[in-house]
Image (cartoon, rainbow over all chains, first blue to last red; front, side):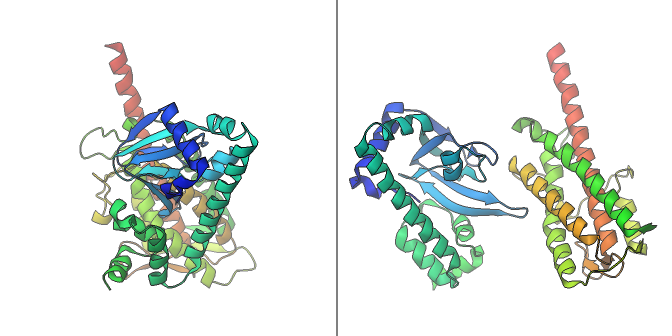
Length: 183
Length: 192
């Protein structure tokens, strides 16, 4: 999850102003796809209001990788970076207002000057650190600890996302999550 | 039924490849078409496919478990279908025109379905084909798998595979008939 709280960072500000300028707003109802498996990701999305889930579909179920909600930047990152078909779906969990910018616009701003490139690489470092955090999430064996790690990072997750999806994100069943939360 | 194992598996894989090809053609239909119901007690294309997904969610892990537990055979053998296996396969074959009522947990009527139901079934078919390929060196007579209907009966692996593949074909044909109906309806709308 790339969150808005890094607003003191100049790059994020710069990117957020791009969304304003581009002003390509879309509204998705629950169950609508922002992106489906097999499509190429050409956009970066800013969630104004609502919530989305990014997941990998197996033969049997959806495996949620991350969420986006009010203030999040999100997309199918590997597809966006290398132009390959996305392995993931991005789907609205409820009615969601999204602004998006095309990859070309973002890249033109990044490559404009040296300062922007440095800021962008700093930004990517943050993304990378989040990614490693998430990897550790999945390796921690105690369900309680998995939940604690996520809550520390995103204390208001339960306000934005229904429990059954958080359970999938934490790789446990909803009953287990509900029991841990209540104890 | 008596058949060489390798022959049976090759036939089932070939049939599954056809089913896979047809399934992929559904991907190009608009969402409304995928949810179109000719009448209220006939399944839409997505309801047909989700029905198959539910069977796959039960059978694919079960088949994989039994295969992993088994010891491989060294040479081709003759597969003999069991009494119940013969019965179940005959029941679900695409050429049995008798309409059946799905068990409640397999009845997909009225579920909210998204178009990724098709992607999921494609993944299931690919997995099934891999599992069948692995079954070539497994004893299709002696390995038994649980069935979704009742826990008192177990079927020979060969019969379970035949059941799954023919059941898939049956409902993909059903979905194809819905698609044909859809095209007829569209022609009708255009000419008026």
